[in-house]
Image (cartoon, rainbow, N blue to C red):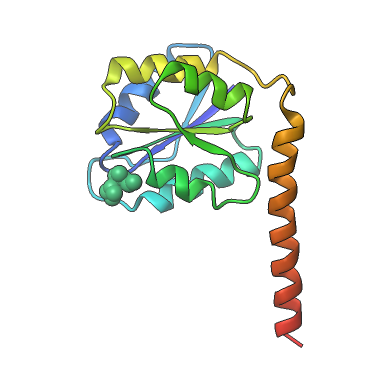
Length: 159
Ligand code: RB5
């Protein structure tokens, strides 16, 4: 698979470790930065990875910040994106199997590199089977309702 990886300055080092780790597998890695530990705003990185997923330029994404929270919150603002913060292998697997999450997020201030590699491997080693499709569809449908409403509101206000 083509895996996008991105981090803010707090996640930079762990991102580099995970990038190398994924490159040693059969997966291809696309690096969305940061490219140093200079300060960078985590929403910018998260939006770029989320956009690449939604445009099908990558199949999955791994995001890293200090806590794994900000990048997930930001990525989830992108229509159609399901990003889950995971720091254990069980949740990482379930993020894919139960939630069809295209992105997982990790916090470099929460988890060490060796555990993080195991979490990423658990996530990448499973594939969505569709068994929870009905529930994921409910999320997708709710999001479409909001998007439709916004479109209607925007159309109304431009009259
Ligand atoms: C720094 O911007 C810090 O807030 C970030 O790394 C992350 O932990 C946010 O959720």
